[in-house]
Length: 123
Image (tube, rainbow, N blue to C red; front, top):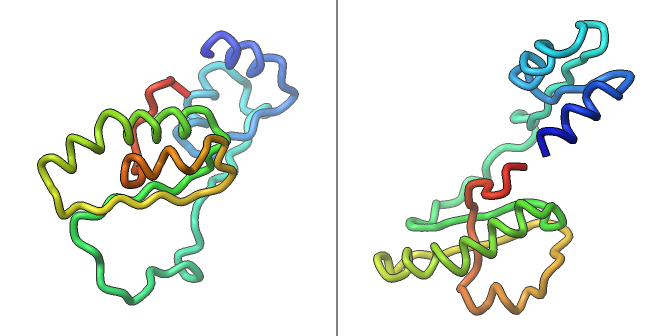
């Protein structure tokens, strides 16, 4: 993946970075006039947490499931990690939500629902 990123980075007419951290990394390899930062984020004035009581011992995954690292991560978590959590913490609840699910939702039911994981594929 790193080789492909390097190739496309140098072939691009212009690079848009979504964080200053990314821009700083790209700036080591690109002239400043080929790089623009367009930060991503959430409008915290518009999107405020609901005034509801938190559910203790809850895990939540929210993400686009048509991206391979998310799909791989959620299934790895559901198959390898979540059962261990339930062994230690029987009153734990796990919730999953997102867009573009590419595998059968039935497989989540076997595992009482998925939750977030680190990126295991380097993407």
